[in-house]
Image 1: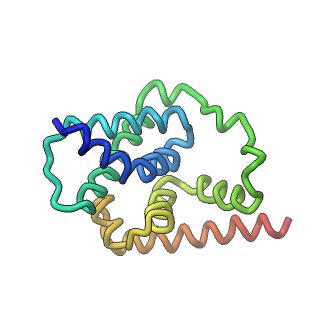
Image 2: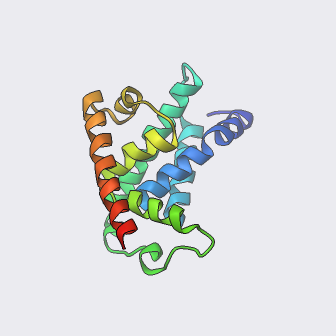
Amino acid sequence: MRSEGEVNRAIERHADTVRRLCMIHLKNYADAEDIFQTVFLKYVLSSISFESQEHERAWMIRVTVNACKDLLKSFYRSRTVSLEELVDWPAEASADHREVLEAVLSLPKKYRVVVYLHYYEGYTAPEIGRILRKNTNTVYTLLNRSRQMLKKKLEGLNDE
C-alpha cells in the first residue's frame, strides 16, 4: 500500500488526465467520478514500482481505459440513458468549443480515444500505440481517419 504523500502527488499529477479520459469514454460526470475513484484506489492498493513518471502516467491511462470499458460493458450501463443525452450543453460554453467537442464526442470510441491522447494529452503515435497496445501504423490510420471525419462534420456545421 502506498503512503498518503505518494498518493497525493499522483493525484496532483494525473487527476486531470484521468478525469478527461473518463469523460471522453463515458460522457457522464457521475460515472467519470466513480471511475476516477476506482483508478486511484487501484493505485493506492497497487504494489507496482514505476520506472519513471511517464511509466506511472501510462499505467494510469491504461487502468482508466480498462475501467471505463468495464463500466460500459456492465449490465447496469446497458440499461440506462445518461443525463447528457437528455440535456443541452451548458450556456457558458462557447459555440465553437461546443461544436468541436460535440464533433469529437460523436466519433466512434476507437477514434475518440486516439484524438484525445494525441491532441489533448500530447502523446505521439508510437506512445499511443504502446498505451493502447496497438500497432503504431494503426494509430496513424486512426488519427488520419478521425481527422477526415472531424473535417466533414465541422465543414457541415459551417455550411449551415
